[in-house]
Amino acid sequence: MASFMADWVYTDTVKDHFMNPHNLWKEGEDFSPDGVGEVGSLACGDQMRVGIQVEDGRIKALRWLTYGCASAIASTSMMSEIAVGMTLEEAYHITPEMITKALGGLPEHKFHCSVLGDKALRAAIDDYFEKNGIENTLKNSTARIICECKGVTDQMIEELVKNDKVKNFDELQKETGCCTACGKCRSKIMDELNEFLHIYGK
Ligand code: FES
Image (cartoon, rainbow, N blue to C red):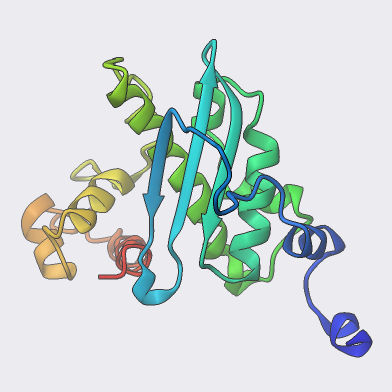
């Protein structure tokens, strides 16, 4: 056990959050969420659920549950620490980079595991707005443009994948017109598309 731990490539902070995850949604716990977000798929073992309680526009409490790997567990545990006490707007803008930095880094190939927690958190905030009939002004505030010529954002790609509208590059191009002008965005489009296909288990 000792040598296994010594060989581990994760930082002490990652190990700590993995071994003692904070704000875990324990079975049977009396926690009534005001909003719930779920992303990922059981098929690839990355499913993530986040529940939030909101008071005076701030996150009062947060619980999460995942079937993901060590990095997903540590990232979401850290995300939960960062998010509690924040306004909904601040919490909506938590990025994987912020989480990874607070963890003292993650192995390069594990970075994508840290995107699930903040995605599920945004979905929980969206759910809170919807349930309470509040206009969601945050929804498009985190979009990044991936194809500049055609104004295609990461959120547009995510919505299309999530709703089964596209399963490959050709379908995405037909739907959005991405990559039909200068063509410089092709590899970035492919990266985003593959990431969302993975996250949503398509
Ligand atoms: S940036 Fe996408 S076609 Fe030019």
